[in-house]
Image (cartoon, rainbow, N blue to C red; front, side, top):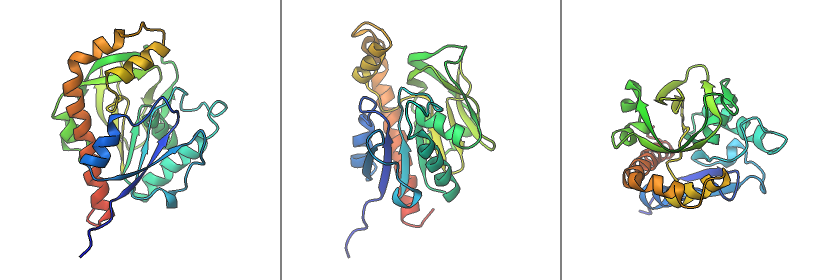
Length: 241
């Protein structure tokens, strides 16, 4: 009897310098998924029928309503709404989190007056987080996460369950139907965080030094998140969810 094919997940990548990074190996080697990465600044945003068994939307430097700068964003928002309506396992990271909120009737505050979060930030998991099928295993591993954002979800979509908050911003993770999204970057190691921080004017090496003491725990959290989401994708692909 031949083994079942590996579930296929479409990854929406907005910019080359905001990649899957560590999620690549966690999702392929550890979670057993095949990844179809679409760099949507150069490729057409796929339709719902073409995304396979799951949808992952990564971060980017544009804001969630920056349609003039990133003309593919309306199609990504529409795809996110379609995926949730169809019950497709969906995961949004940073900009992906914000696009999900906008797609489903929430609101993103651009350059929020409470200020940005750059670097290691402690979050508080809500009571519901422990029971979330994806976030629960990750939340049990720690509470310090990598942040690199100026915009925030200030109004979650109708029906959303907020799963994490920080001292500065209330919606750090949320569940909306089949979608989980996080404001933080579970994929980002110290070197990638440092490159992003330099784009914000920080000296080379400064962010890496801030992140390094937390990185072992951050990697455990990120891998747990990826594997748990992979379990959900595989269950749906097998017809058991």
